[in-house]
Every structure is written in C-alpha cells, then in structure tokens.
Image (cartoon, rainbow, N blue to C red):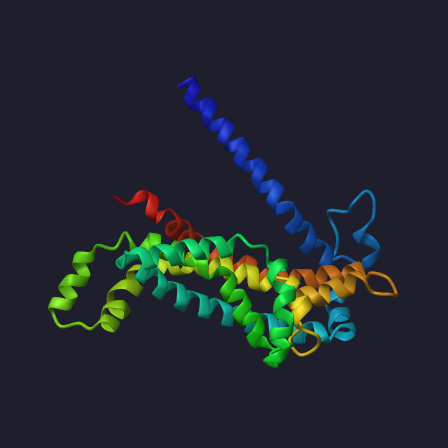
Length: 276
C-alpha cells in the first residue's frame, strides 16, 4: 500500500513538473501579448494586470504584411498536409499489403533519405527551383514539406494498416468491391486515427518551418516565421509587445489543433503496439 501511494505521488509530482515546464512559456507568451510594453520586461514581473489589446492593434497597423504571411502559412500548411496524408495513406497500404524485394528496397531508401539533413539538399535544389520558375510560390514549399515527411508518415500508416485484418478486404472483394471501393469504404475509415497522427507531424512542421521558407521565398509566399525574424531584427529596435502578439497568433491555431486531436494522435501512434 505504501509503495502504491509513493508511486502515485511520484507520478503526480512528475506530471505536475512537466505541465508547469511546458505550460509556463505558453502562458508567459500569451500574458505578455496582453500587457502594456512597459510591464512586459518589468522586474519583478507582474502577475496581476489589466489585459489590453493595444499590442494586437499595433501589430495590425505596423505589420500588415504579417497577416499576408499568416494566410500564406495557412495555405502552405493545409496543402502540404493534404498531399502528405493522401500519398502516405496509399503508400502505407502498398507497403502493408505488397511485400517483395522492390518494396523492401524502396522502404530502406526512404529511411536513408529521411536521415539526410535538410540543409544538404537545400542549396542544390535552389537552381532547379529557379529553372522551373517555382521560386517564391506556395507550390514549392508544399512539395518540399510534403516530401520531407513522406517517409516517416508512410511508416506510421503502414504500421496502422498492418493491424487491419486482410479478411475484411477479401470479403469486400468477394462481394464485388473494387480496389478503390475497398480503400474508400474500409481502409480509410479504419485508418482515420493513423491519418490524424500522421497529419499532425507535417502540419506542425509546415506551420513553423523557417529554413526552406527563408531560401525559397522572397515576397509573395513568405510565411509567419520569416516575419517574426524580421520583427526581432528590426533596425529601430524590438517592439516586444507586438512581437509577443504576433507569436501568440502564430501559436494559437496549432495549440488548439493539437489539443483537439490529441486523443486521436495517441491512439494512432500506439495502435500498432497495443494490437495483436
């Protein structure tokens, strides 16, 4: 009994410390975006204050390009996520159901490519992107982000589809279902949790990615991380209130999404280890 109580106490303390460690920066960011500039860096810090939207108004007035970048980030993130989920769901199905030397070799190749640092392929890609006239477009970032996560998400989907009994598909084929009907009515509904888990990784990466956006965009397809870096490096000094307001607007959509789908993400990532 004492060991059980002690283990519960240790777990409770550990979880509390992790929640505080993870949650404090987020709370600090949001609270700072609502503080007057003179109170943001005040010492000792003020935990009780009157919230104000002045920083958000200043962001709208002084950095209108931020909202264009926010729109670009949304378009690129949704595009990359949709492309990745579609491709990796189909690829995961193939790797799960078709097993031969060719699929094994291609799977090994994907793992090797995934281990290559992004900066290694970025510079050689630049002249190719210019040649195709894709520089500073949404398409180039969508393709790059999707490509970067195809290997990882394919393995996630394969592990999940492995748990779907093949007898269900055989019964559907016996009833006259085509391959597309089998995918649409059986595989995809049963693999939804895995698709959500896979989409979360590419969505978070695409929303926050800086390197590819910095190299392959200039004006039309700039994303919010680039504008945030410009705010930090502003010649006339950093406006911390405006910066915190911009960072909050960039953080909230991802935070809300992750909270909303967290149970599906956990279920999708643990399905392979819990099923027979």
